[in-house]
Image (cartoon, rainbow, N blue to C red; front, side, top):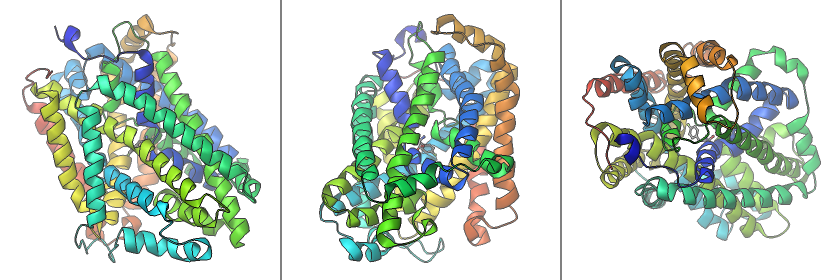
Length: 501
Ligand code: PFF
């Protein structure tokens, strides 16, 4: 019965665009290019491609295939393997939900900057170079001295956050029927904007110098664990794995639909976008090095610094069309974030709740959006950057994602097991995958994820207080993980009432 009533993607292309939209996010633009530069350019690309093939593609096939097999989002998949495993399906739901609470605040920053870009509010020319940092930390964030000083919400960010959640609600409350076509438009517009930014970037003076830094290869780096750590963690992060949503997106594939080829298309499409984004980022890095006569270390940065300081400085320095390129840049960032945010909300949280409790889509969507917004208010405060995009991000988008991912692969690989999944996906896919898949899921992916957690996480975060914060603030990371684990056990014990509409 449930099989007949479950919602489906109207067309294969809707699934592909929605899956690409979920994977392609802020990380492609603000995380990948910097990692490549900092980890040996071409050498990093090799490690990252190994990560895509050895970890990303098998794990994607696993999440799509298991969702499709059980016609269910993550918790129902694990309940299907055995009731005692259901909690493993809830943990990534918590991860996805907590990510949306601060990811949406970052999107609110981009809205604030879209308005600011209209007049290049942080200043033109040299004034912009001087003022971009103060504008971001002072005017936009009103940043306090540390995580101990929370302060009050900033009205402009609060308004932006309302707008973001209203848009998310409008996209998700009708499910795949709207998510599919919207994703297609969002992705095509976002790629067009990215294309405009690349063309603008590479035609600026100094661009070639920046691109040299991006792609210059230092093979010796492949001998260092750091490169593999960076490449593997980026692959898990960029494909939006380990946050429940891909199970749900896979469960909406029609029963005769392909899994293997779709995983390949989304994996490679996502990575190609990252590679392209690197040209937009490093061409402006080169332009700034040349126009400000400064070294690469002073310009190249990642995440928040790249998007909200380096880019605004570049926008101030452009010879013409400053407001235009400013708006395009922040709109592009907003759209990249949007398709990831509604994926996390719908596939990661709303769909699992509907599947478990039989609630209606509209009510569940409303509840999740309102609660997500209310928690997000905390991250619009003066101390919001520390708690949201930093501490909580480390807890869920690093530890949560990797640990739940490793557990997922072990339980599916050994318990389901992998060979059964392989035969199932091969039955309806464009091409077949061989027994290598079983080895990846049972050994390679969990081992690689645990390596990342231990090498890049535990070995550094536990002895040194994370980010140099006071110990009580960095310990919040472990608090979040323990609380979400306990909640997952509780959810796993509750009776499943059946699917909502
Ligand atoms: N894969 C997207 C990105 O790279 O930005 C979306 C995403 C991944 C969002 C991981 C949040 C996250 F923690």
